[in-house]
Structures are given as structure tokens and as C-alpha cells.
Length: 140
Image (cartoon, rainbow, N blue to C red; front, top):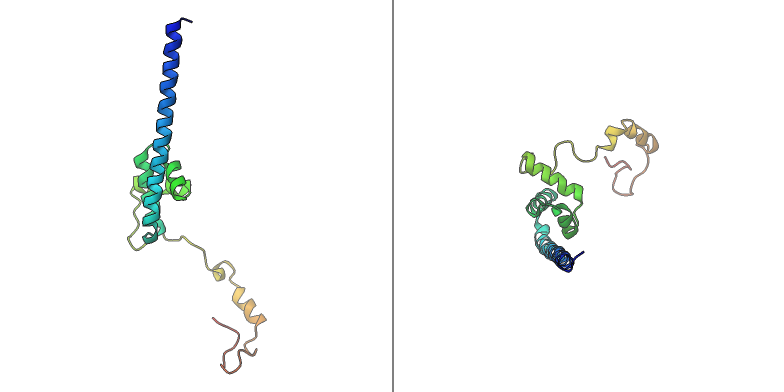
């Protein structure tokens, strides 16, 4: 290998290392900026607004944006990806909704229809309640 070719390779590797370090430090600066914005704004937002804001920040950053925003905010990557899908597909919810209909936990009485009769059998209606209030042990 000639001397000029070796010097050219060293120059190329140095330039590549410099670009990598510059990218790394800029990414950390962006992460810090996103983290500061999120800390200020998160108090006023519900989970939907947080998800959509994080998704828009990740989309602006491009490649690696989801991981960067996730590290900066503490939101999970699937949450941010879900926000990106909502923004790209225009899956808009009505303004008063945070989640789609059907989200959340089902009532225990729906999952176990004979739960209330079983509880009634355990706590008889004639069982004594709190003294002086006239209330029984059943609260529903």
C-alpha cells in the first residue's frame, strides 16, 4: 500500500469518526431539549396528548427518533409508535375521548355474572352493620 493511499484512508477514518461523534453529541443535545420540553408540558397533558406530541417529535427526528424520544421522555417505544400510526392514518378520536371506545377494564360483574349472588349469600341481608347508622354490610 502506498503512503498516499494510507494517509487517505487515515483521513477518511478520521472524518468518519468525527461525523459519528458529532451525530452522537447532537443526538444527546436533542434528547436533552426534548426532555426539558416534556418535563414542562407533561403536567397539563393527558396520555393521548403526550403520545401524539412524542410521536410528532420522533417523526421530526427521523431515523432513531422513536428511541431518542423514548429515552428523553420515559414513554415506551410502542406508545410512541402507536402515536405515529394515529398521526399517519388520521385516526382521530373525538376531542373528549382519550382512548378508543371499548378500552379499559371490564366490570367484574360482567366477567363473573354470579359474583353478586355469591356475595349476597356470604353477607346475609339480616347481618348487623355499623351500630347506630341503620346500614347493613352491603354497600352496593
